[in-house]
Each structure stands twice: as structure tokens, then as C-alpha cells.
Image (cartoon, rainbow, N blue to C red; front, side, top):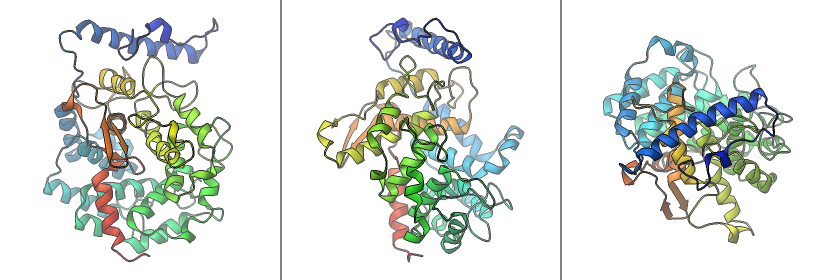
Amino acid sequence: MAYHSVKTIDDLRFKDDGLSTVTSEEQEKVEKAVAKNYSVYLRVAHLDPEVPLLRQKHVHYLKRGLHHLSEAYECLDASRPWLCYWILHSLELLHETITPEENFHTSDFLRRCQDPSGGFAGGPRQLPHLAPTYAAICALCILGTKEAYDLIDRPKLKSFLLSCRTPEGAFIMHRDGEVDIRGAYCAVVAAHLTNVMTPDLFEGTAEWIAKCQTYEGGFSGEPGLEAHGGYTFCGYAALVLLGKHELIDNKKLLQWVTSRQMRLEGGFQGRTNKLVDGCYSFWQGGIFPLIHTVISGSENASSLSDENWMFDQVALQDYLLINCQLHQGGLVDKPGKSRDFYHTCYCLSGLSVAQHFVKSHHVNLNVVGGQENVLAPLHPVFNIGVQCAIRAVDYFRKQPLI
């Protein structure tokens, strides 16, 4: 049986009803690899029942990446603020301190990514883009010094965000770029954290996002496309920040996202009939704290648990700890995949969500593997540490509204 289930592996396996397809064959391969890992663990669990988080190995992998990247990362030259964010956020979740020297050099690099006209680019002297703007601002908020905060040119940031806005309230990712629900999320987060959010900037944005909810209940990248976990998180988190979550069908969203947790694996898939992927531990798992907060303020609040999110938190932790950790450090999409900073970040983010149930000032820890596995809690709307988010919002709220 899978480690997190009382059912047998055969009961949990995908049923193809006698009709094999490429999709079903790939699913069977993943289930076989995951089931093998669970079975191996069960055979030795009596020797050490705790599932360890390889904290120091992950820290070593992340710290090395913060100081030096190999030539293999050349393909991510336009995503360098993302690399800063993925590494810094992973380290803060692991309770690892950033040294003053690391803080200075990271801040200075992000300063050079800021475009003279506003917003941040994927690297120095590149085109400003909403995605690295989100990543850079989140990274600077994690660094959390006055110097890091003041590095952000808020008036020019506001101008850049306005330049990306379409007449209907959607956002293009960059000049002459594509319209994408991720752009709306990045713009809302950047504006909210830095206190440049004004009604004119987001007029019609919530209504456009609501059009992206599909018949399944999740959100697509733009109206008329397929529901996807990353897009769903971005769309719903933006609606929550805008205070417009009532524009969509929350019940249908809840049905869709709960159906994305895989029975045997315990992790989440990003779309219907797709494979499990560690990154959706956050993109899907991070939706539950948001929707829990929304429902708790509605007439259906009595149906909510006061101790757990509305997904199997133990199963998700089992998947991440037993299937996604590499012994040399770093976390992966699924067994057999290579490590990278993206999956390390979002696997750890999902692990944090699964460990911490937060309602008002009440925190209930549900930790697989013992207290030594506990990560720092994160703010589910921004996906940075709770304290970093509070300090940043407090600092910028004291600055004049632009």
C-alpha cells in the first residue's frame, strides 16, 4: 500500500478501463516509480519511522546557486531575478539566514535589472517584464532591508504597470507582449506590496480574470482556454487581493482543485488527465488557504474544519519527502527528474502549506517526519514568508500612495 493510504496500491492505481493510451501509459510509469519508493520506505520504516527533510543538503545546494551558476543555466539568462527569488524563498522556508554580504550582492544585482523606465527585466539591459518584476520585488521583500526596499523606484514601477494594462483591464507581460492571467497576478502583487495600487490601475481587471474561469472550475491563461493549476492560483490570488472573489464560482473552483490531488502519489497534477508534478504542491495546494479564508467569511463557514485544509496534507508531504527529495540536495518534479531551483522552491512552498493550518491567530501544525522537518510559514497570496510580507507591507504603507 502507499505510505499515506490504508488502501492497497492496486486500489489506488489509475484504471484505464481496458483502453490503453499514451496518457494512461505515462501515468502507469509514474505510479510504478512512486509505488516503488513507498514500498521501499515501508520495508525499512520500522528501523526509522520518521521521514527526514534533508535540510542541510538543500541549503548547500541553494547557497551554492546563490553564489555561482554553471554554464548550464545560460538558457535562463532572461530569468535571473526568478533564480534569486526561488533560491531566497527556499532558504527562508528552511530558516537559513542570508548573510549581509549575500544580501548586498543580491540587492545590487536586482538593482541592475531595474529598467530606467520602470519595472524589472530578466537581466541587466533586457526588456522590462511583469514576471521578473514580481520575482525581483518578492526577492527584495525577502531580503527585507531598508536599502532593498528603497531600491524599488515606485513612481516608475507604477508607470510600467500602467503601460502593461489593456483597455479591458488585462495585462500584457511586456511591451508588445501576450495577454496572460499571470501578468494580472504579477501586477497586482507588485502594486500591493509596494503601495502603488490605485483603482485606475486595476479597473476591469477582476472582471477579466473572472472570464478565465472555465467550465471545470479552474482558470485558464486567458478566456476560452484550458484550466491549469498555475493560472488558477494566479487568477484566484489576484481576485483575493482585489477583494473580488465573489465574481467567480468558488464551489466549482473547490471541486476542481480537490480533484487534482492524485490518489496513489499524494501530490497534485496541474491539469485534468496530466501527471503529478511537485511544483503543483504550491500552485494547487496554495489555493486551499485562500479559498478557506473566503468560505470562512460566507454562510458556508460552519462546514469548514478548524484543524485542516481541504486536501490530504499528509499525502502531499509523503509525496514530497519520499519521492521529490534528492540525497545530494534539491527537490524534483517527480522520481527520475533532475533537480532545479524552480521545483525546489515550489516543492518546499507546498510542503510549508501542508504543514501549517492557519486560521486567524490559531496555527495547527500537521508535520510528517517530526518537528525537525518544520518549515517557516508562508503568506499564500504572495508566496513569501509571512513575516517578510508583513514587514514589507508595513514599510511601504508608510510611504506616500502614488
